[in-house]
Image 1 (spheres, one colour):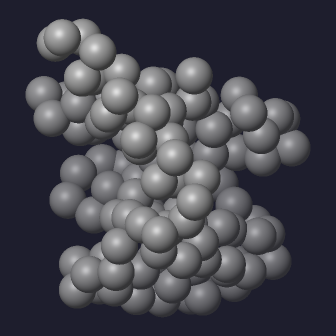
Image 2 (cartoon, rainbow, N blue to C red; image 1 turned 180 degrees about the horizontal axis):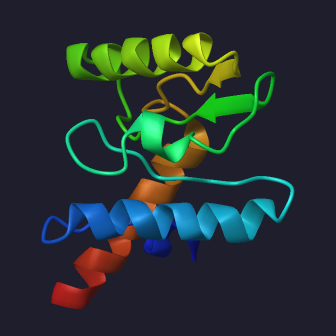
Length: 117
């Protein structure tokens, strides 16, 4: 189910990211707040973290599955903004080779293939 729910759509990438945040919020529960942010759209990192207080913890999950220059640039910006506001920061590293991610993507691909057969 998670694989299907997290599948991105090229027609509306912003809505896909918002949907991912909704799903993660539901899975993680009320103790955590998942907020989608965008480098080129709204909300920005600064806007999405506006309500966080000094020393609160911020975990960044880049939706780039693999390392890339754009990913690094986004992370540097987010890190600098978090540090400037006194937030404690942790980063989920690239996950392209993570077994769970690969299995989830494989299931999503199998479902897509089944629809056209």
